[in-house]
Amino acid sequence: MPSKLMMVNYNNKMTNNENLADLNKFQEDSGLKDLENLLKKFNVFDVLNITHAEIRHSSVLAWLLDPNENHNISDKALRLFLESIASGVELGSLLEDDLKLEDVEVRKEWEHIDISLLIKTKNEKTLIIIENKIKAKDSNKQLERYRNIVENKFKQDYKRISIYLTPDGDEPNDKNELQYWNIFSYRQIVKEVLDKVVPVVSNDEIKKFIEQYIGILRRVVLEDTEVNSLCSKIYKDHKKA
Image 1 (cartoon, one colour):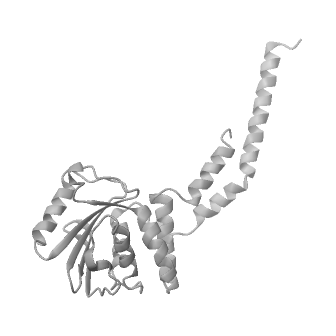
Image 2 (spheres, rainbow, N blue to C red):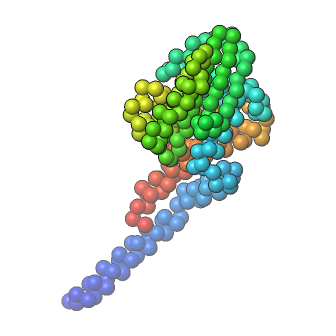
């Protein structure tokens, strides 16, 4: 009759063999190679280590929304953006088919506001300010302060629209400002603006740049990419290992 010590050693050996088998299956999973290839894929935003830098994201968005910039897509991104926010904002004649944007000025960090769009048409003047939040939230009275600056400096003529931009369309900390700020998300930016802009870009370098920006938004900011899906599958299949 086997002793207790022999039984313990036998059970430990069986457990170790099972663990080793689980580990081997994990190491042989082709998904690991796929994951490695995805993570090794070049992205300029990774190289510059600016994936979470709000000011850099604001710079890219301001560049895209400015019809006078060197992306050579004219006002395509701006129009898509206006169409996207139109469901919650009264834009008046800005969305008319025959609209001619006679004067568009895009400001970055004006009065510490991330992005300011001054749009003049034959019929009206519109100011759209965008407060961009990637990881942080609005600080105490920040949105109220920005709103007061805009109201004081653009008292007449300009229609004023305020956008609070976060990855998933979160509300600001200051609930008193909800009535003044329109909620918008990076998910909408990707789906309703960037994905639609890429097909109309004629310059290959600019197209690759925008595609890399979409990639970094989906992977790092929105956290819902092929990388995350593959990681979840690998973990589910090899949780024991």
